Length: 235
Image 1 (cartoon, rainbow, N blue to C red):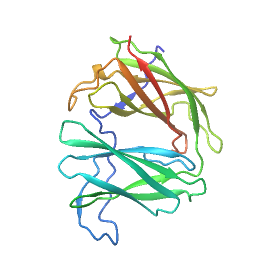
Image 2 (image 1 turned 90 degrees about the vertical axis):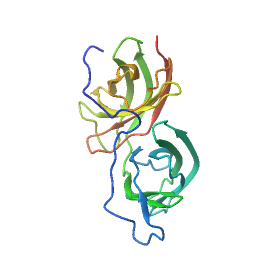
Image 3 (image 1 turned 180 degrees about the vertical axis):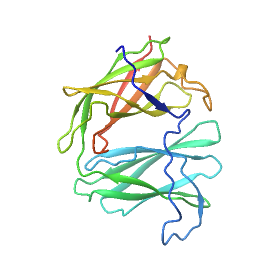
């Protein structure tokens, strides 16, 4: 893949922070903090999605609340210390097939209160991606070349769709970000940054040779696909 997609990456785990304007109505506890970043921002009907949140280390998360909660089940909390004053929390969120589409409010419940609310969305249609594979992953190259199959009943992909990625290569920080891909004849081709080449990194990069990669693609209406995953080794 000769041409390189334009890349937007926040170093460390921070991809996107969308902060609400205040406390959720009816909260019994005061608002104490903010969610530094979270991914993904959409929850797929009929599927279980792993929701990732980054929050300060000094105020552990006890649970998350998603409102309205009808058709939504939260389970499986795990955490990962990023060694830079923050913790990467993971929750499995299962959405019923018949859950009503639209926005939901998400807050993290911490020991001393609740975070400022952010928004996650249940879309009314779901683009489908599959057959994710790494075409080229060279240790000394700046980018990792990836390709995947994409279909979109109820919508369409642009010629240069957004592709969101979460890349974990060993014990360092996972890299999360968004790049522009190229869509043609049911295939998206995209290049994502090699963690070793990122500058101004907030902490130790995940620079191992064996990597786990997750991606989502966004269609023309702004709706995210399912998550597709693969593992690969740098050569």
